[in-house]
Structure formats: C-alpha cells, structure tokens
Length: 283
Ligand SMILES: NC(=O)c1ccc[n+]([C@@H]2O[C@H](COP(=O)([O-])OP(=O)(O)OC[C@H]3O[C@@H](n4cnc5c(N)ncnc54)[C@H](OP(=O)(O)O)[C@@H]3O)[C@@H](O)[C@H]2O)c1
Image (cartoon, rainbow, N blue to C red; front, side, top):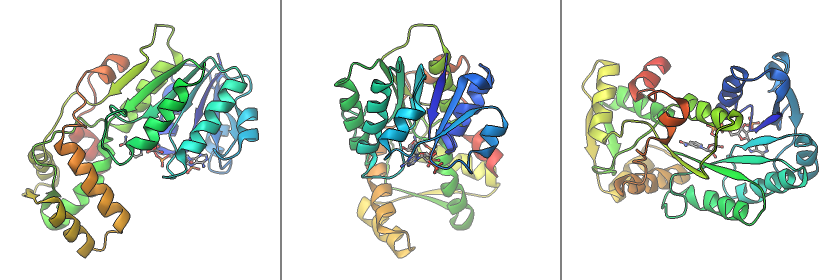
C-alpha cells in the first residue's frame, strides 16, 4: 500500500512521516511537499518525495499517482485554504485514491473557532465527492502553549478571557501518531474522529503547570475580551493575532476545545502525553 502525506515538511506532517516509518517500509511512503530542499532528510531516509504546491493541480495529480491512502494536512495560508484543499481532493479523486484523511477542527460544523469556516468548507466539499474519507478533527496542540510559557516566564501571569472553559490539548506527536494509525490500519475506520488529549485543563490549571515548570509563581490574569485585545495591542501583537487570540478564548469559554471523547487515546492505544511533559521537553 502506498501512503502519501501532504505538508510533509511541516511540524505535524513530518511527525506523521516519523510515525509511518515505524510501521511501514520507507518505499511505501510518499511525502508531498512544496520545497524539495526542505525535504532532503526525507529523501535520505528513502521516502519518495514529490513536489506539489497546493495551488498546482497538475503537480498534485502527478504527486498522487499510484497512491492508495493520503493524509491531507490542512494548509496554513488562511483565506486560500479552501481552494488549495479542493485541489488536493480533486487530484485524489482523479488518481483513484482509496482513502483520504483530512486534518480538520473540533466539531467544525458548529464551531466558532476562527479557523473553523475553512475546515467546514473543506469537509463539505469532501462530502460532495465519492472519495472515501476520514475527518481527523484535531483539537489544540500542547505546543500552542509554548508562547504562554515564555510570557509567564517574563510576566508571571497567563493573560486570558477564556473563563472556566477547558482545553483538552494534546501533543502534536500524538495527533501525528493517530493519523499514522488511520493511514495504515486494516481495521474499520470511523468517518469522524474528534481528537483531543485525555485531560482537559482550565486556565488556572495551565498557570499551575507553568508555575511548576518555571519554578516560579504564575497567576491567571482573567480579563474581559476588550481588555485582552487592548493589552495585546499595547504589547505590539499584530492585529490579526490579537483578533485570533480573543476569538479563540471565546471558543474556549464556550467549551469548544474540551474534546474529551477519548478518540485519540483509543487510536494510539495508550494515554495521551500530558501537557507538562510536552512543555518540559521544550524548555
Ligand atoms: N490543532 C492545532 O492546534 C493547530 C495549530 C496550528 C495549525 N493547525 C493546522 O494544522 C496544520 C498542520 O499543523 P502544523 O503545525 O504542521 O503546521 P505547519 O508546520 O505550519 O505546516 C503546514 C504545512 O502545510 C504546508 N503548506 C502550506 N501551504 C502550502 C501550499 N500552498 N502548498 C503546499 N504545502 C503547503 C507547509 O509547507 P512548508 O513545509 O513548505 O512550509 C507545511 O508543511 C496547519 O497547517 C493548520 O492548518 C492546527
């Protein structure tokens, strides 16, 4: 079986490749990338590297030729992603790919997360095709809280408007391992996986974790969304990230990142990696 991963030089995609190489021979793995130079280490490991930017439909056709299963890692160019993802999906259909897995967002159909609309549009497009597909609705990465660790180190606090909302984050490597299982298993697959870590934490619990890791007191600075926006703007954060952060905290406040159904630990066959372990290894 030939398995392709798009975005294979990205942070998630490269971890999926690592996980795949523990399960199948490198000769079965295709890395779809936009920069062959960046993919040199994959070539060195015997992976078949194919260059195909998401905007280049003809290149995507060539990249997915002979592929049985593909993981479409959602792109990171906000506003362009739906057209880009459609190109990959169309190429997969044209090349007779048997299964496409797509990295989406939790409960994309009802989510108010700022990233949700492009994921939902991609999911809806997939539903119009005859392509067998699996939605990997990844929750938040633990690694998203590395900036919070750095901020806590300098300010001694966690700035938030997320209230008592909980986040069931998980390590990127755990999401990657889950994707690799989906790509390689002979077992029946669910159409939708809502993926999150085993433990959902509050902002107070995040502050306690950061405090332990930094060995210094860290408190929660709970503010209204308008205040959060003003403080971040004053600190020089670009407007797009201010809006993204405030909107994401609103979604967290609504419980939208409390993804605790256990799909991820069931896929990987073990408990998910704790937040503290991921942040500690980054310290
Ligand atoms: N769940 C979460 O917490 C979370 C957080 C952030 C992002 N995400 C989503 O999950 C995806 C994977 O996460 P990540 O951490 O691996 O992000 P990442 O490191 O930014 O990886 C994105 C990948 O997409 C590739 N890509 C972007 N635009 C492309 C294009 N036009 N043509 C071909 N390839 C393109 C990038 O290629 P290059 O390697 O050449 O740059 C990269 O490999 C992100 O793209 C985003 O959609 C999820």
